[in-house]
Length: 186
Image 1 (spheres, rainbow, N blue to C red):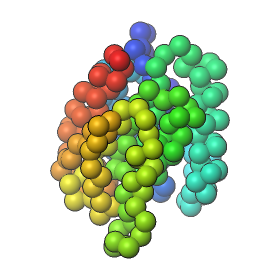
Image 2 (image 1 turned 135 degrees about the vertical axis):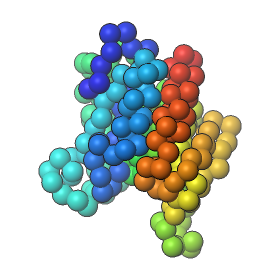
Image 3 (image 1 turned 60 degrees about the horizontal axis):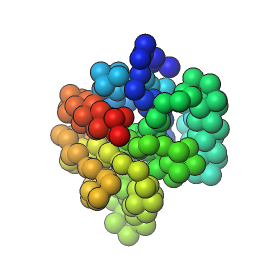
């Protein structure tokens, strides 16, 4: 937990399918949150903690995420607005569980709209569209997983780079910071 003396909200972030909580965009989002007086909890999914590289099925990922959020809400997160999110697969988990976790907002770093090279594959846009709270998607302009569109509740910020969001970490950080300030004060 990256804690603050007087946080205005808490951001809980999950990692992508093949990575961990040290991913560059998660580090940038953590810096942005702390600058916006939002404390941060970085959560490793059980399969990664156990040393496995392949993610569990979606229902298991979602259940584990809700369990972690419930445990945090019962203790350290009590009484503050909660924003959930993650990168890639972690963003999908946060979207699918936004209602169950009573999230005030969802941060999606490199949302994987469609598997690369498979234009016929079903889009994952319904996962984004189902979220009823403010959503920020930070997406690399050349992300092979596609580019979601904005909507009434979904802001999409395009930054230089691809799915790794490594090319312009300052842009990632600025987008996250500005959005978190607006969500945390609502």
